[in-house]
Image 1 (cartoon, helix red, strand yellow):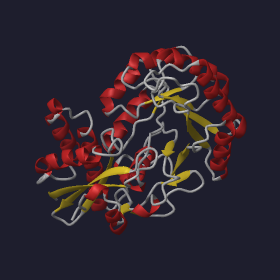
Image 2: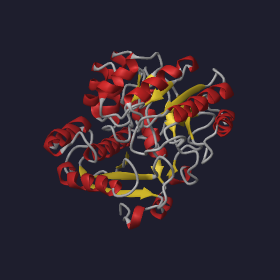
Image 3: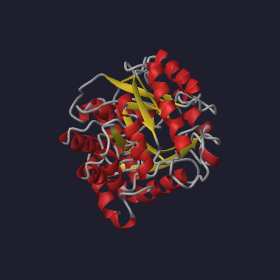
Length: 387
């Protein structure tokens, strides 16, 4: 089998929902008529989607003629060949992710087996999800508690809330120091959430890397009795030593990794003893094979993996295959509860999630396909579809 063509497109809403609703997709065509699709997160709305598409198309000629079963060879050919151009950074690593995922989709379809079997089989049939929650404009204890209870009643055993945008007492939007008034409000929100859902439900808190070091340490120590599932990105991701300092000062579980790419950047997190949980975004960290390598490295350090996920059902199912195949999976993010067209964009075994779990597809390949009619209607800013 040989690759005959590579195409890409950008899909999303003109007014994206929180977390971003703009995704880049790649399709790889073969001389045997088997077509693979891979999703890669564009890292946010706007021009980044087209930057990822451009990176995919720039790799096109280097892929055509290759055997799609040589997944690792193709990945390393592109990654190593582009290292002087930033192949471990966005948007090139995003493009590599989509290509890798599409190749696995082809391999599974050619063999008539789901992707997880290409990764050594599965440890679990269902992938536990946590609901990324937003309480709207009202940033009160009551609003947060009501949203958490709503998600628990929908079957989720874990929820996550943001605390970096409360705006209470914030005088300077560029200064990451959290003053006493704002810190008191943030702690009250977290305490109110824990009181609302009890200790039977796992509670994660996201800071989005918006706190400075002393503020992050203060918060991590203050919430120790609340036994969070994790405190996420309490400081910006680019300074691993600062993150390690936060972790060293508190028993609160520290999670980071959505802005780290490839196994090499995660090795740095492990070496610095900066995290208790990793959360790579598997739609941009390097692809299915690289995600498995990252998870295996984490397992060697006895660290669980809880991927960041703002993908469509296609990218989310790709992540589910990987997480089914590793022992140290903890929980997978669901960020789509308020996107009305999310399920319609893809075809597959529906519903894609139920009672807080996603069932791993048994269909060949990734097991989820784009609905071409819906996807065409959601093309981003006049982009053209694959054909």
